[in-house]
Image (tube, rainbow, N blue to C red):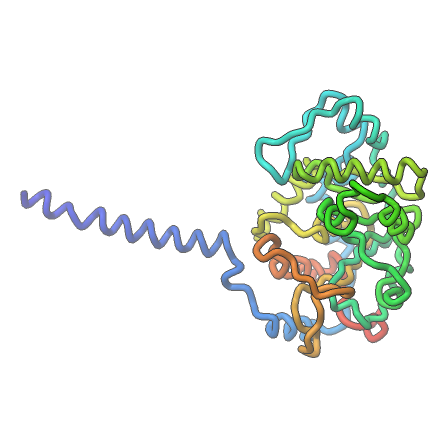
Amino acid sequence: MVVMFLKCPRPKLSVWAALCVFVLCWLYIFPGYRLPSDKEIVSEVLRQGKVWKKNQTGIAVFRNLLTDCCDPRKLFAVTKQNSPLGKTLWYDGEFYHSHTVNNDTYSLFVQETPLQQPLKKCAVVGNGGILKHSGCGKDIDQADYVMRCNLPPLSKDYTDDVGTKTHLVTANPSIIEKRFQNLLWSRKAFVDNMKAYGTSYIYMPAFSMKPGTEPSLRAYHALSDIAANQTVLFANPDFLRNVGKFWKSRGIHAKRLSTGLFLVSLALGLCEEVTIYGFWPFSVDLNEKFISHHYYDNILPFSGFHAMPEEFLQLWLLHKSGTLRMRIGKCDEEAS
């Protein structure tokens, strides 16, 4: 009995040890609980100043990392080459759902990835409210290749701040649903809206989540039927999945990466120099004055779906290292 009594405290110690390990692991896996405040972020950005120096070695190293994990040149879009008839495309946003490439879908794919050529200076334009009154439009339009997120407005009210040039723009199926009623009634508004993007690629995650497949295919046909200037590309779910794993290993934990970070990843894998605009997920600007969530509205995203502050911090580290350039604030006031 004495021996049994002496052994009793051991399980208690192991339970406490296990609890401590669990807490430490939780804090490591979910670093959002110790993210700096908006004010601390503003102070850090202001301390960095306006001088930025390109790090060619850092750019090459990061491009190689993305090539090894995700191969953007070959896999960023679904093509006839990487997705032949009979291939199973597993949805990256849903478990246990897939699409087997058949004659109907295979005919919609481009032959090969259209971004094979070396891209020089690329601009990735987010939709943050920090772009309002930034005067960044001329800078953006001077880039050799411009990528934009989620069919943003490019009317005359905004061109001084966001420019007009577009080579690739993303279109999430949720936008097709909310803005264009899933294209079930009239397609005219959608087709007319696409004219703002010139002869660009419309990049759609048709095989990320099952409800998004049909709206994406309808968008393809809406533009194809009238021989529009735009070409629909379907995001390769393998690429999206691998990019998600890549950033998760670097501390970004969210249900899904933002569209902007997917585009930045693509640009870093393809371009010689990347400058990003409108990536500022905070409610105040560098003068600590309130700004809207987007440069065109103040509609907030679903809470907990993306980890925007975590994404910003990762991009800010790349800016500080010279791997990419982040433009914040007024472009005409920044040192070139």
